Amino acid sequence: MTRRARERALTLSLYAVFVVIVVVVALLADWEAITANFFLREGFTGTWRAMILVAAKNTILYTVVAFAGGFVLAMVLVLMKLAPVAPFRWLATGYIELFRGLPAIVVILFMGFGVPIAFGWRPPGGVVGAGLVALMMVAGAYMAETIRAGIEAVPKGQTEAARSLGMNGSWTMASIVMPQALRIVIPPLTNELVILLKDTSLLFVLGMAASQQELTVAARNLMSSGPSAGTATSLVFAALLYLAITLPLTQLVAWMERKQKRSR
Image 1 (tube, rainbow, N blue to C red):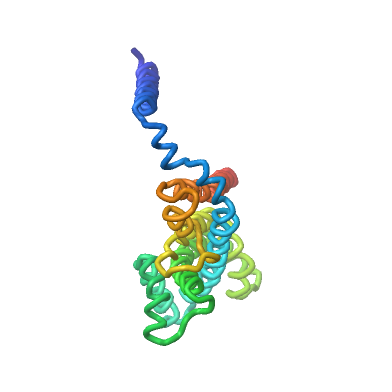
Image 2 (image 1 turned 30 degrees about the vertical axis):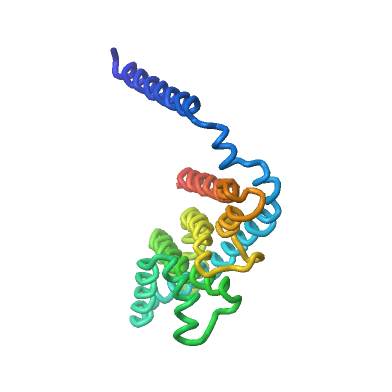
């Protein structure tokens, strides 16, 4: 048997094993219990308004606000890290390392409870505002490193050519380097957007009013009250909504990465 034939036989064997596993699981599963606990019809038809028009909308809104704020913070940190003034670089580096090393939930708790206790000040927007500020702080640290890597990926010849034409450092960075760097980092920044969307589920630790709930909090509450109380249908509903939002974004990232590879 040739090597190609062996590889083909191995592939067919793996497919056969997969089919057997699927068939065995399908035959042994208690579909009635699965449907009653995870796919209760009333859990979808009776809660779609709260899950889609309130919870999903809030999740998307929180993600957009946190991403926009984190991006602005990241740009400031990158400029500080590239500044010729050493204390600015130290401050930016310390901030980035600190907030990349802390779990997001710790920062959320700190902003929601620690800062008000210590300083008697609460961010605008109550607990939701505090949680969003925390997500901005964490996302800004990660995005700053991503953008910095993008800037370093721009060929130095671009900068040298701009300087030879008489452009100063600031104008070169703004008009030549940064546009190319942002084009390079769009895929990883989109990945950061997906991560940030899932991190909005951590806001539950601060407590929320019904109109402020995001998908995870709404699903958890519907497990104890509502048409699907006592089942996990609301969690399945939330998971499907998360996938409906994140899968197009991840496919967009894959498409942009393929496009970048073709353009090189």
